[in-house]
Amino acid sequence: MGSSSSFNSNIPWTSVPSVANNCFRKSIQKPFSIPSTLPKLFFFNRFAATNSAASQDNEVITHEESQIPTNYSGLKLEETVDGKTKKLRLDQWVSSRIFDGGVSRARVQYSIRSGLVSVNGRVITKVSHMVRCGDKVNCKIAELQPLRAEPEDIPLDIVYEDEHVLVVNKPADMVVHPAPGNASGTLVNGILYHCSLPTMVSLPQPSPEEDVLSEEDDDEEVIAYPSEASVRPGIVHRLDKGTSGLLVVAKDAHSHAHLAEQFKNRTIKRVYVSLTCGVPSPDSGRVEIPIGRDLNNRIRMAAFPPSASGKGKTRYAASKYKTIEILANGGSALVEWRLETGRTHQIRVHAKYLGVPLLGDELYGGTKGMATSSILPRVPTSFHGSLQRLISSVLERPCLHAFSLGFIHPYTLENMHFSRLPPPDFAEILNQLREISTIKVT
Image (cartoon, rainbow, N blue to C red; front, side):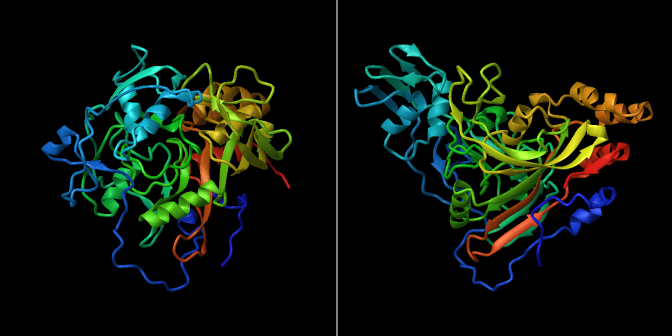
């Protein structure tokens, strides 16, 4: 059975729920043996105990294991940066000087943010502070309050599952993993329940926005392995809170490592679809513009052309796009995206760079006001009332959906491919724009 890797614009969108349930899915064809020793779900972190040991910051792997590693709370480092050290971030330098693997970089970062690190006698709370030769650094590893991840009976759209991997169709407005201030209702909470796992507790991590915009990620869409500070059962990659669509979860260490390597080598096949404010020009192409943190807004990323000055740290980013349909007399477009890299907010940033921010993307210019000014002047006044109601009541998140996902199965080495149509909110907006006008781009 085969499947086109391109978005099928001929699908009757008014029947999205029923069509989505029957959308193409390739399951494993060949028989294979399952090692009986594999755990039901592999957790890529060290969890703090849930009893009184948790308050003492003892770290354990799971509830069932009785052996407790060394308590690292209060561990001190007093050292002068030597002449061989090049200009380096404070968190990187401290991590490199604590040789025991029991202290993760995330925990070092937490210690810095907690005011427990000083440079030349001055307390530094910025993890990206640059240290230089001769700097005197004093660091104390913080005691951390545990972050609980409770199993929650959250309905999950399981697209595929076997003993090693799980493919989930994430709804919009669901956060992938817990963080302080957002410890429930996440995909991880649902996975804990789905796989019948107990409550898990881990060390704190940054807020959702800080985590998404983590400065140390090599490929910011891929979750590094392992991290004691994460409550992320086998999460290999992530989607933004407002993005719906397909996401793969690993159930054991081998699967995680294998899938992470595929992401690193850019062999994972991912196709996204979006609705934009306006139409890209040209209607298809490749955006190869580095992405870095927006210098004026810490929670936002920005595209930095080579000619840009004062751009700070940027990372190479490349996206291919193709306009599938021109909608509402050119006021919007249905656009397909294929990622060559996985930078934070990459599609949203590159869409903005092209001058066509995603509908509903308040962070990157696709505001309700922008949607109104982009579409209404191009359409007959008879549509104005329905469009204004649509924009005000339905357009509540960036119109972006992870439509298809392909990868090599970590054990059978089969090519797996899955696809899911966008959810009803996306479909409703698309259908109303099509009612005004639609031109399919060939």
